[in-house]
Length: 230
Image (cartoon, rainbow, N blue to C red):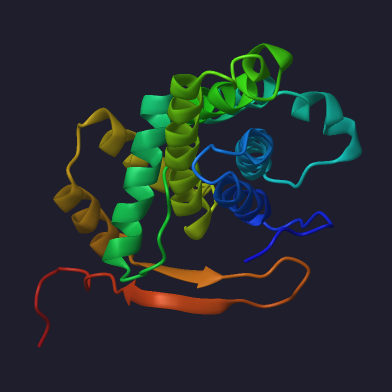
């Protein structure tokens, strides 16, 4: 892997750049690459937040959204406003993973932790400002910064390696099922029983392309019960 001289638009671009700069820092012995790693990882966090904001909005970013994308804090606030607080977000993704497992879909979906991402962003930001740079002569500060950035890089790598999406639910009955699961009033067995009554299947669609491709295994609804007929 090597540093790229042109910006890429894929999710992993900033993570790869930051990882490469971190390696060039030689465990913090070279502090310029260390600060560049922090800058790239901060961009990676912002890129993830931008992706999730677009997902929860149901559309990609547009020029009119520029003000919303200027800071991580603004994006985080909008995500909570549209998608609910972190506990609700955790429940939503747990519910969707349960449904995917019932459909035998093996795609990995990572639950975004926006509070953790905020901490990562602030840690990286400390090395992107003159205040943090002034302490780069302190060996203990540098050692701690390298360890923190290494942990951030690993966490970001795990996150971008999964499916970065925000599954949307439009069916009222399905949404009620999710709400009950999040609130704890129904169990995973209850979810399966409900899905067996109505049946469910999944398909993948590609933006700007017609048609869809079935994925996983459908849950076939139980036949209606009733009196036997001769």
